[in-house]
Image: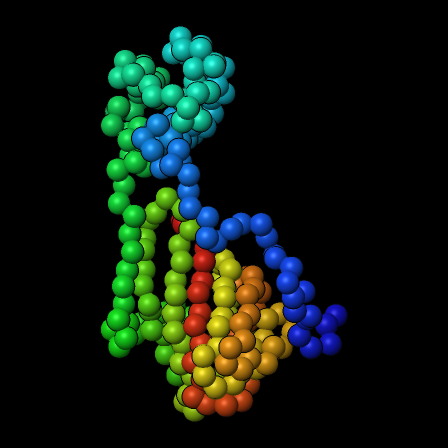
Length: 219
């Protein structure tokens, strides 16, 4: 059982994971062959087929199918037609991820939309900074600026799917997550599993504003 104090911070200088945020994708990951290969692999897995199963159905060799899925060869139109018959999809389906538009939203200062988010408590102002619906990542992300004032309720029992990141911009709040209360001041952040009860427990210094980014799987 926790004593209500915050857990130790991550060790300084030690990365939490190995992903390089500045990495640029190799050209081979962006080209047409790679895009076709990803779609072939996705269709095969969706239909519960192994590479050997697909080879038996299409007459293509396992080696050739592996090269196609890995983006190491440019399949002919005839090969794509054979694969489209095997998966019962149009040939154009193999070009879907190559042609898809990648969305971005630019919200200028003062243009964010104030919304009534499901489960919002009295006096909690939610300003949505942008929204991208269905996308290839399989994840939905909701970024908000949340403002708390003297009219705001304290409610440390929010629960919802996904992960959430808070970044304190202004004011001070004692924020509960599960059995632990974290004192948040400007510049502090809190990253947590949002399935546990969480929310502001004590409004220490008002007004308080923080960035809230919620991420959860697409339905």
